[in-house]
Image (cartoon, rainbow, N blue to C red; front, side):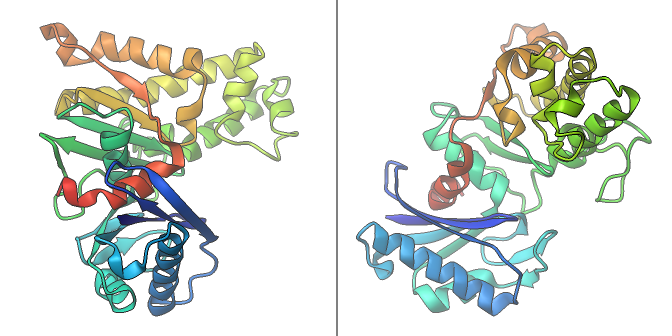
Length: 313
């Protein structure tokens, strides 16, 4: 039995996972205000122990605990996180002092990729890629059946430039993929479109502009709104630019799209995305195939992948 811990910007989740990758018990609590490294480690350890006991397992009998972190890590240390103020934190050692079992750390998108690889849409592949569309854009890659980690710094796909001199990114560059294809980028472009067209249904779908989300534009497009439809096309073109780059670089057998936006309607997101990928990817010119699919596991992918990390490192 294993515990997978998923550290999110809003919630902390712990799942008890068996050899087959099945979630047997889940605990979730709000992240809350960060009180420091020691209290944070103690909270994670307590959450892991509770999830184990919920599944009828003594925490000391766990094979190990895997932790998905939204930032750069080694297997033992958090190098840097943006949303939680931690840098050079020996989190594995701190957790072991409470749990007395081995602990592995990994980037959260990498963990989600591992989860989908073993229990989701990546099953049966040797080379698999996952792109997560959320506040930013994350990426995880299984190459030749091993997680591509590069010392915790791999997979930052959101920071390749797709619009030279474009919108400023939090990383300091301009025109990064995540400034256009993340939920944050789509929300920004939705607001801009609303300001250009005061009669758009985007206003209705967002309660007069007070509740714009990554799904607002898709909801309005389904109702036939021309401005929303045009924005959907623009958004997919930006998403496809990065997706095709990844297909050309890694040639995965399957590339999955996850995150909140990844739940959008087939005809508005995946169908046009596949059309562009098939038209523009290098592999199709050589008789290869492009497989771009919707991720399967949703919010559970990170917990499952964290729990199964040892199999691909």
